[in-house]
Image (cartoon, rainbow over all chains, first blue to last red; front, side, top):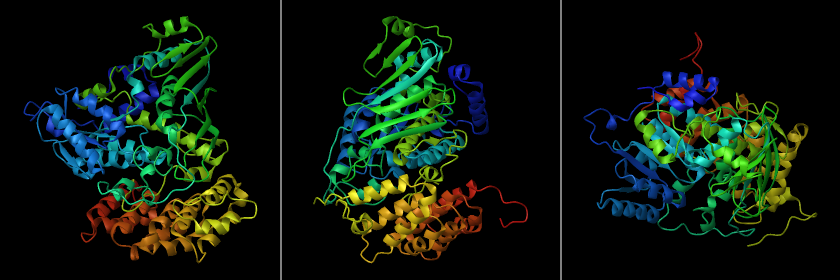
Length: 435
Length: 176
């Protein structure tokens, strides 16, 4: 069974449509055997949650609200306390014992009764777990950022296409009306000629001193498996759960935390879901000592072939937003607020009937579950997620090197900078591998 | 423990050798900045400094890992012998691969393949991942042997098989 979503095929550029069409034809998106045909043992999509910390809480709440569509059959975490709490929550919600609670994700990806996984681990694990899942016939919802490196993202796309798996990137703004309206409005020329896009991200919300003492690993934590492909280092409680996002061995700070959401909407409005900028420049303030190594102040700008720049900057007050500035004024869209240079622009933005109609989803989880059944590409397909994650990584690389870099979005390389090219991937700690 | 601020009289190349996990990282930060900002013409000299530091007798584990992470960015064939020596030891093999996997050229390819003669267990599986990640046609025979060898670890064999699939098909007349 091979299909493409009706609305994306009708609205995405011809090049992108042909690209996806040819991929789908070469590697059909295969329905899991467990769900096939009238004799299927269950109409429910069986789900496993891998990583049960902060980010998984919301996913658990949402999925437990769909008992008729999806059932959580397993949870996995290298922290025994966390995974057991999550399993108990699942069992309590279903009123029955039976949710498996496991330490090693490979116990989940090899289960015959799992159709799809939610990858909610720290960022340095996203690619390897998602790769293992699709290689074992599972569809995957992967939290943002899709991967830690650009090379990992391309590897994940290849594996997803090769194995015919659905991969949804956890950029749920794609399934929120205001962002859908904004991207469609900008792309339809609602602001007149678009001049620039400005993304604002919040500052780091955790701090630690210039030095730290290694600590004993808690008895409930499998620290070796937590580290996984990341370079080895001694344990410290401030460098593990949640705070991993401020350490560059595991994440890219707020760029890939909040930035991934808002840069994604910029990419959408620019019709860059299968491409990206052609240059990037920027500077960051990096801590000079201590456990945290990601930039505490971010300032980078991506330049696109159409001449439009998209910047990403830390602001001390307020959360993330994406602001589109055009010849008719500006609109500023955040998760919980929106504003504009005039109310007329906001009213126009929310009206239907734009000249460009984008892929529509009103619920990111439901879109993924729908696509598991229909085998259509989801609204934040893996290629889209990769291109957005690439923008995050380009900013990170430009800030690290402190120079303007030319980027080729076709070859996914820096044509003039061999040092920058070495930052496209990283060697994994033994025994892990992105291959 | 709070280390001294890097001042004008302190040589970061000396201090970074004694880097400890959790200790003052400001010397490493100075060198990281140098590595990132040095123009192409100066990279050879910088690489030589990194290699001198890597050879220091009082080099710590954290210092070694930091220096290898920087050689991943600017290392060349000149760095391969020192890294190959680290690769031969399971304790330092991951640090060596951190650099070797990213250094272009046949010297790094050869060093990684040579590591197969000594490394065992999880270090060997990681090594095969690095060999595969480089997609070097010269690794085809070794990868084919590993993929087919029932004595090898199952995950290692799977990585070798996937690595082979990433290589372009052999041209007529070359070994399978």
